[in-house]
Length: 231
Image (cartoon, rainbow, N blue to C red):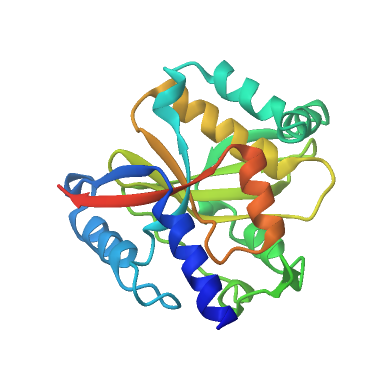
């Protein structure tokens, strides 16, 4: 009975979420975009009544800032954490650069194997195997944070699917320097300035551990319901 009540509360909460209309554009990479659309809209592995990435999606509405990243920075400053953390990282010499992952294979593997658990869960075995080469489809890009010694300490690969960008892999060394806040804040500011997409997605709130949900909120992500179209 209690489980049924929890399920009913969850359904009610999800139904109240704002709706984001997200568009996949095949022209960017026909095969890759169709494959991603199928992944995002297949049945959820745990909640069978909903689609995979449709409920509780972690999004930032980039269009709300009118091309001015200052509005976003003001928003995260009010959280009392994300703004100061990203500024702390910058003050300590960390910098963001766009990278080709194939030029940093060993550094990425070192990041993946630097910690046995993340968010209270063991690292997925796929991350522990050193990749010889990463695929670089045309709609993908990757950004990395480097320390003052020019060592890669965090990275984010992401796909530009249409009117939205979604993270693919996001990882870094455990640190008190705010490097993950810097990584995302810089990417978000660039996307706002470019004015090429409407939304930035970082997976979902649904099923995420409490610490990760809190991190997403501090960076400015909010839960949405997503409606997809393939164009």
